[in-house]
Length: 367
Ligand SMILES: Nc1ncnc2c1ncn2[C@@H]1O[C@H](COP(=O)(O)OP(=O)(O)O)[C@@H](O)[C@H]1O
Ligand SMILES: [Mg+2]
Image (cartoon, rainbow, N blue to C red; front, side, top):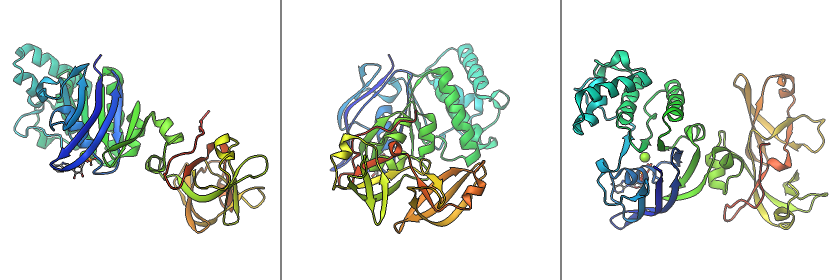
């Protein structure tokens, strides 16, 4: 049972508290991604798990054992950093073997482990090279190899792909996922990149300013963000946010603003909220383009259409504010020329309290 349990974890530097009481249960074999803007406390939290930062308050357990006061080397975790932290004067084989040598494992066992890990990571033909003679992606693999070879209970990753170019990042992302599927080691992965979070995570933890905003599967957070912070952080382009008043509507509640009206789902929390000023969240992917002939469309002013191949981004304004629609191009090119508005299925709309930012009850499903 090599899970990781954080219970009320706090970090303060002197009088300044930067992590304000994190509760998180990472299950055995789970891949959990901590995501959030720069400075929100992701690395600090990860380093507390690794034992590289002292824990100010709260309890940290790995595999059920309280480890607050246990030295990093005795926690049975392996960390992969953004800057790889390879030894420049050692070759690939020696870099991968380093942790095992320190542990004084038998030579033949070290050699067998290095060979196996190099095979898994496609490094077999580079074992004699020094880090300086490797590409960024290969160095990243060596850093991973050094972590894997130790067979730790938990992998910890801090922005391991940030130094790679976009193409390599996508490739390494898939490799990390495959590796996790194969090895099944409990992993906590830190990134500020929401695409990495969405693609890698079993569960995502969205952090903001030293606190957890929401924990859930990628699709749970994408479809049902608990608040406006999560809604705007996950998804690119971000969710469109429209200020409106809830009105009774015909048969179902609607959001009304500046001469526009958008039908909302027929659920109690919205029907009981008539008269309230809210923020209506519409994902760019959920708005469907419409021309003048479509009844009930919401009119927009088109500013710019970016065609990206299989999809297009329509940059428009709605009631004077930017509004973006993401649409497929295939079979729709003629339609794209005549867009003057959009419709949106009510059940895909998320409504937020404008003051607290919290979502009103209701569930969006992709089914
Ligand atoms: N050694 C330190 N001393 C004082 N403040 C620190 C130290 N390390 C990090 N911080 C502060 O803690 C906050 C969280 O930092 P960090 O965990 O590195 O954020 P993230 O990894 O999410 O970008 C930031 O405000 C940062 O300035
Ligand atoms: Mg960081």
